[in-house]
Image (cartoon, rainbow over all chains, first blue to last red; front, side):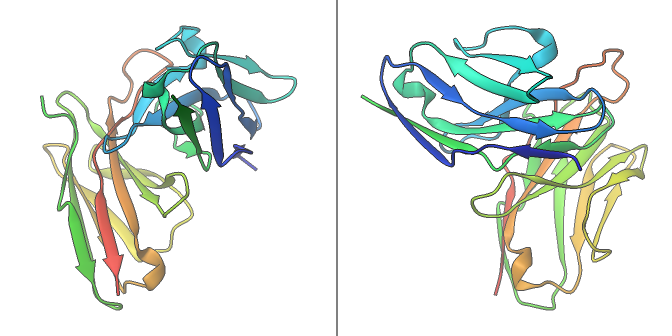
Length: 109
Length: 116
């Protein structure tokens, strides 16, 4: 079954502390993995995708095929990082995107 | 470019009624997907339209149907509304066969449907 799990519903960290949002998936094949973010009163938007191997707003995510994980990390959290984060996967550009339940990140000043 | 637009913003309906939600894709995009996001959950894929045809469908009953027009805009129709249909309905657009394996879906602000 194709599934994305995010074990933490809520995550609170202090400003300047490292943050890691966990994501695990089950999928037969080689999916594309994404992180989407939704800031307060804004629409859902793509944060990063694994094949780009880029850092966006200081966030990085490494795909671990052995552990089927795609954890999102940032070394120093900022207040503006407070948002809802969704891990997601898709097969190709014409396939559906499967979202996880989301993790609400709160950065404490 | 206003990006993906959706109408209406909010909607209140009664059980058993029918509803139509509308979506205009981002300029240059030809593919529209619809998602249902219940409170506290991630978006769930309903279906995707390309070239005015349904390409893929998620695990939603036939009460959920859609349409895509020649200008790529799309409608989501839900018949015989149930209380459980109350959710945020998101529309996302992308360009199919963009030539790259990777793609990005652009989401609209959503339509909040409340069924009483």
